[in-house]
Image 1: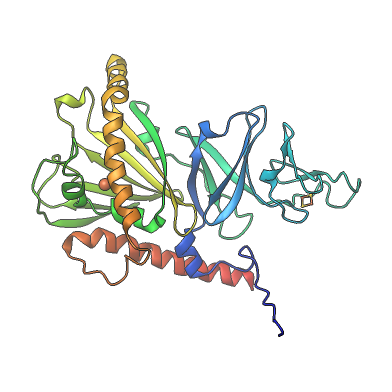
Image 2 (image 1 turned 60 degrees about the vertical axis):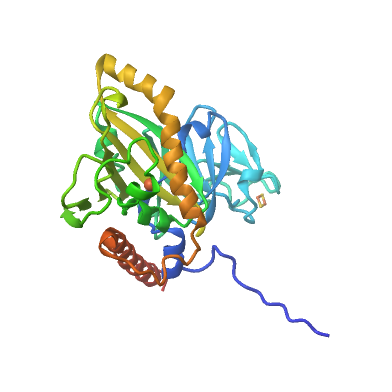
Length: 352
Ligand code: FES
Ligand SMILES: [Fe+2]
């Protein structure tokens, strides 16, 4: 019996297609990658983001970089190598690469042309709001636009708590879920903050210069009544508020900034910053109260979302019967679909 061997190109080969962009996320955007605290000085850590493997590498002096987890020599994972303080040494043949992706040493062949060459992919990174952000270009070596934090997080009067989780759900389902405020009234009915107000509503979309609001037409300030989707400076996020009664302690409404980063087509890294505008001694009261009483409750609410999304079939966004409450979901899907088509076309043109 004869066997034929089929040779298929590796997944890092060839221009990204529309389907791949939909599955693993749009490029030319800043994405949160990991909480800063998860890569200490002198540490390195492998992560998968947007369907590819990366190495987060922090020098012993604290400078952070993010490299494709592929050694420039023959693509062995750099993450299996050794941290040498200001560079990493590949375990396979000892090639040394620094944070810029430049080969510093080829010990097996000193003076080799690879030495001094910027041969590993290195992403632009920024650390802000206790989080590592990276810019993922559609076309290699595209310069990142300046990183701008969401207004709410940049406001010095705002105290925030970051929170990080990994969910076994496509990134698109995360966005569908947050663009659907009505689920708060049902899925989170048993929660501490989302039991108030009507169980039926009408919604509208209100366009803004940098995205849109999806909001109830006849209720505000009672429950999860609106959400804003923002696309600003190549960063996408959602912003929402949930009102708190006096038992919620001092400060203005409770805010959430949310972002999602695809890990693979089926898993997502989700980032939330729970915020409150509160200053002076009241800020200490709020921080104490949050840690002592509210944080657990928030995790419980988030777990309800995770549990529902993880139970949904991978094709759950096909063949639905949507109604008026799903306008926000339809709007965000259309937006990403159009953007993915345009981006795939641009990538293809560049590859020609
Ligand atoms: S593959 Fe890394 S040194 Fe050869
Ligand atoms: Fe929710």
